[in-house]
Length: 260
Image 1 (tube, rainbow, N blue to C red):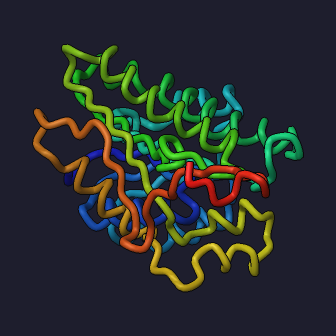
Image 2: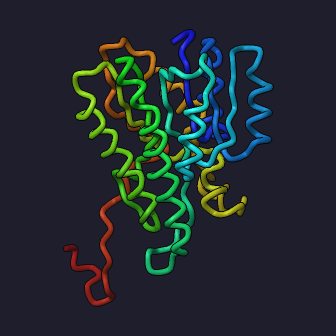
């Protein structure tokens, strides 16, 4: 991977920041985007002695801003070899009939539309050069439902299916597509989900050893570094302390004990 150009969304923290550090160690050129300029500046300062780093304050929900950011890249950054669509979030755990509709819209706009905008802007260049790799960060929530997961899980199911369909569209090219599907990982994810409630966020991981951002970055690095003829279609990973839940059955008092 040395000397490649890597475009990472949501790079200011969590998986995105960890991926930035991993790819920097190999001497790649990095294009790092996120909404938080101060965090991007700190990351750029940290990594600048290892590789060439360009930061772009960017909200992936803004289609015109995404297009403008990619169209205005300087020559040495223009040929993007790897796009890591990492920007995404979950908001709330309320049941569907109680949720804040704006939270649903934010998740759809970020997790689905933002990923679409970045992919559509970067992909033509990859196809023209007949090389490249799209890495989409999905979630186990896209395959395995849980109470309160509603739209978040649905957006991550989109990421999985969109990745599969990209593979079909790109058959006959040398452009690869991978969907990484992490389970429980301790980053800012739960703090964002609970809108800054640190106690609630800590409770998600209490008594367990979750995945780390570095675990996911190692996985992304491994996937991207496979031989050019190898495409890892999807990769699901969980902490050893996590598994799928039992089948949920609601029982009324007069049904309890029947053993259905």
